[in-house]
Length: 101
Image (cartoon, rainbow, N blue to C red; front, side):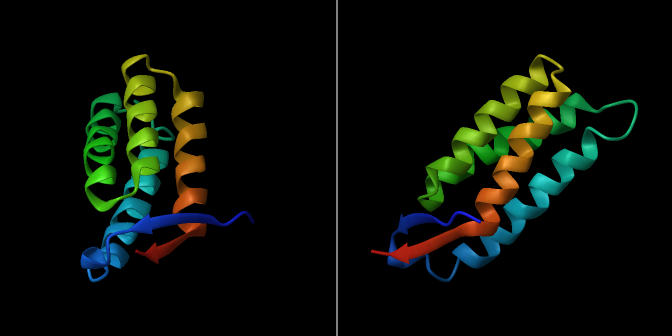
């Protein structure tokens, strides 16, 4: 598995572990949201919108990029794109290594 390096402000060191766990839950919620009929695109879009807004605040712009992509896919009702981006986000969150600098 590839490891990603994220350089984060040391002032956030107490917050990052909880943030990453919440974002893992968000990714799982998105994946769950596109496996149950009827698909709740509004909820998927809302979760993705939050991802988009929060990632950069924690120094993890990649999270914001995935949030934006998932939000756009939800607006288009593109289940395969949502699933793909959510799986990629999960893989990123599971393999990111935080460097406090």
